[in-house]
Length: 254
Ligand code: NI
Image (cartoon, rainbow, N blue to C red; front, side, top):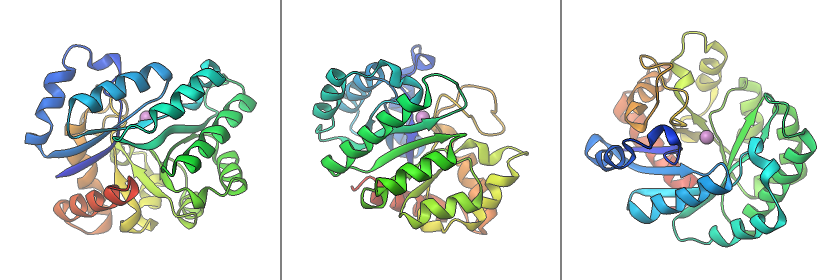
């Protein structure tokens, strides 16, 4: 079975067929799914999905690009929801400098607050970091993120940056980008990342792997990602499936 460590089935891209798609997952080899909240409203839908499907778990948090909506009041709401028995992580949280808004100070403030929420609740973190490697590493070092742990989701940086996160004990989430022809830097990084620190994810509905690049993504595409990792690592897809399943269980403390 494959462990999908990061998907967004709350997204409107699934409004037509969300239930039929999710129902079909176990019979198609997807054994567990972590649906990741990115805003207060998507956290609410994530909770509905984990209440409805035995094999769906949730990460609850607010994505850096959505932090403008954060208030002390909904931060208190988030803290309460994180005690749900199927909430396995705080996330996705972090920094995204690809978009100019919200401003960097706002993003940093809520990254640090949610990081410390994870510490307080003894939950791992799902970290989103895009075009913000240095500030992400600086904050994680300053805040002693190594005491909390978690995953760098949809890792997109160099092997040197991977080494810094690995030294802090983090897992690295590998998604569809690994199948892209121009993903040389990422393939190099995956070559260097020890197999016991890799987990697989789709980030559905985004980032569909080749041969579905550009289309809506879903967890049934994970075998393409697993095949690519297997080729890079000189393993069989079955071995990668098994190892990444065990890694994900450790990451999310099952
Ligand atoms: Ni995501």
